[in-house]
Length: 218
Image (cartoon, rainbow, N blue to C red; front, side):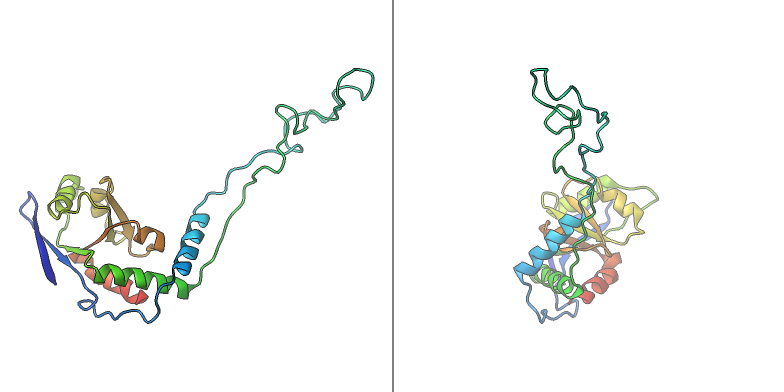
């Protein structure tokens, strides 16, 4: 591993900032190059599927008004009207308004693998995957020490994505309140979240999980 910087925390634990490379992980360049069209297709599908789809309004058959005729057709001097539910009236129904719906756009597994593999290889090759030797001591989250690790590694001002196992609750609680840090579990990586940060962070204790995750993509 190429040693770039040394980070020391106040608790005197050794925090080394190494960078992981494809060669060190035993990875070769992906056989297929990522297409920007494929990347945009997946990002669009993610953003559409994340929408709640709960917005809705009432049409003229659903508003809480009687359907009787407000006044007779002729002889009043007023414009003719047939119902209080008319969309032309105040509190009437809405014409062609949004209705609750579920959006499900699917993306093929081969496209996901190609996109994830290209993103991961580019990050590794550019030296933007930081390898930190840090672990929570005790049984309580330590946000101050977690921030010191990022600060001393000169990553506190960067947008970083931190990978961790889903059962590592103490590390999760230590980093979750740091504004520039985004946490991703090893089973929820996607194109949208991976490209939103400048650096990735992998902890020494979780290196095997990272190797397994990236190995499925490349």
